Every structure is written in C-alpha cells, then in structure tokens.
Length: 479
Image (tube, rainbow, N blue to C red):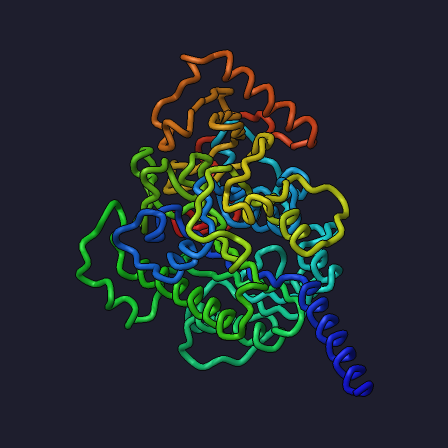
C-alpha cells in the first residue's frame, strides 16, 4: 500500500509539474500582414463586393480596432516601424526607394534622403522575440533590405523566405523550389502552416507577410471567375482584385484551421492588418492616375496620402480564451505599438527606444480598457508622384490627438484640422473655425519633430522641366 501511495504522490507531482509547465509556456504569435489592403476591403469592414469569410470569422472570434493606423502612407516606412517600434525619423525610413524616383526638382522643396534598409544597429522584432525564447519565422515580403546582411535570417529570424514583385513565376531569397504556376500567396501559406506544425511544441513567432494585394494585379483564374458578373458596390468593382483578396482570406482560413486542429488556439495570438491604405480614392482629390483598383470610401484618399484613406487600415486580433469574442475598440493604435505589445506578450526584454505603447490589456479586456494615450504622429518629408504633373503626396506631417487630427503641408505651411469622430471622411476643415486648436496641435507636432530630430525638406528654386532621374513606374502601381 505504501508503494501505491508513493506512486500516487509521484504521479500527482508529475501532473502538477506538467500543468505548471503548460501554464508557464509563452503564447505563440502569428502576424499576418497584407500588402495594400484598404480599410474597407473586407466584408467585416463594410465591403459588399469582396468576400472574406475567414477574416470575418477571425473578427467575430476576437477584437477589431476601428481606428488602427499604419505608420506610413506606403509600404516601407510601415514595415520599418513594425520591426523597430520606432517612427521614421529615428530609422530614416519614410518612403520607398530613392528620392530620384519622382521629379522633385519641379517642386519648391528638396526632399529628405530616404534610408532604404532597416539600419543594422536596430534590434529588430524578430531578434527581441528570439531572445525571449521563441523560434522565429518569416515568409513573404520583407522590403527592409534584400542583401545578406539585412535579410531576416540576419535580423533575428531562424527561418525566412523572402519574395515580392510577382504573384506567379516568383523568385525567392534564398532560392526555394516550388511547383510551376503556383500562386505566391499559396506558397507562403504552405510554408507558414508547415512552420506551425514543426514548432507546435514550443513558443513560436511567425510572420506571414503577403505580397498580395499589391500590383501587379494577378489572381488564380478560378478565383476570378467567382466575381465575374458581380455588381460593383461602393467603388469595389474589380474581379481580379477581389480574387486576390479572396486568396489572402483563404490563407487566413488555412492558418486558423492549422492552429485549431493542433489544439493551439488558446495558446496563439493571431494578428491581421495591412501596411497602408488601398490604391484608390484619388480621382475625388482631382488626382489623375491609372485604373483605381479599389476605394477606401467613406475615408478620404488612398495609398501614399496622409488622409485617412492612406493610413487607416484593418486591425484584427484573435486569441481564443484570452480576447473576448466579437468586440471592437475605437482606441487609436499605430504600427509602432506592435513591438512593445509583443514584448509584453512574450515577457521579453526591451532595449533602446520604443516610440509605441503596448495594447495587450486592451486586447484582453475586449476593448473595455480605454487608457489615455499620447498623440500619434506621421512625418513624410518627400514626394510621391501619380501621372505626369500630378502628385499623391507632397512633403507633410500629421498628428492625431484624441479625436482631432491636423495635417501640415510643408511647401506652403498650410494646415488642415479635422474632428475624426464626427468627420472620418475629412470633408470639413475646421482650421479656420478653431484656430486655437489648430495652433495647439501644430505646436505639438513641431515640438515632436524637434524632440525626435526629424529632418525637414529644404527650400529650392523649382525647375518645371526637370525629369525624374531614376526609373520608377509611378502612378497607382508604385509604392
């Protein structure tokens, strides 16, 4: 009997130890990033044309932020902010590529030179999470340096395959075999699901960063066929673009299914967002571009602009049993907030400057916790072209503080003031009606630029005939 008692005690101790180990295990994180997906490009965000049942289910099972922002109006500055937790003036990344992509010499300011790769002295998010005990993987678009030193394999990721530029017949870095004719979103999802399966028994951090729905707008024919003949709704009209969104949605569904089938739902935070606004909304601003592939209405403008259509994006989180289901939050969040949030999730160690703040408690409270946060800032000291003589963006800065947003245009010094709760479409400029508030917000924006040493464009005499000096596609197909 005594031996049976000892066995029972040993079994109880073993069970307690196993329970303690399970309880102590750090949660997994899966971060899915779409490229150029607009604020209303999901059914759960209001579209009546695009079909996104898997992302919609993710929102129904978790929390959706209505006021989530990208750090930049185009790809690279947002990705730099996500991986560094820092605003563009600290990393030097505020746009894509060289200033020579557009004919800036026709304008009155010389733009600030852009940094095209995430500086190596920055401890990237992958490194911080690997230091916290995670196995880390990145599959998809990186855009922070494709060379060996800047590749995600050297920035804290144990496994990484980078690809962008094509949806079919794509290349990868490093080279990886794939079936002829395979769609990139499917390939990346295959790698992501395989990563989860191989690392399900230890904490993992996975980045699935799609190149879709970025141009070139290409989709699988069987997906396109689903939308041919569908009546356009609210500026959403293109069957190929709808099919690209459907492939991203299918990817989300496959990842969620893998997590749930492996019993990892309670242990895995899943994040879905986009890097900037959708490619559309320009014609209402008098900007001529090629085909507008989508529309961000009721938001104003689109990709490349500091109006809401260029920077407000979907933000959806699911963590079974930790995030209450079917909730929304109108608390503003920004790309720079992801890094500190995931550090808190991982119980990781912070090093260096982080400009954002963690929203983990907002997630776990289902949006009930509504802390006061300081302003959110944007700094875009450059130009983005459209068609000849047309510009999506000229040098500007912006601040959102509470429900108020101010945009400052550096060429003229003009400011625009909007109350976003009442006017999310930014149609009613209140700068003249509320000059005191405009002065206060502009002073706060200037003070932030001075505190962060934000470089400013410099005056020059414009040359109306000066061409761009470096090839760039321009228009709505460009970054």
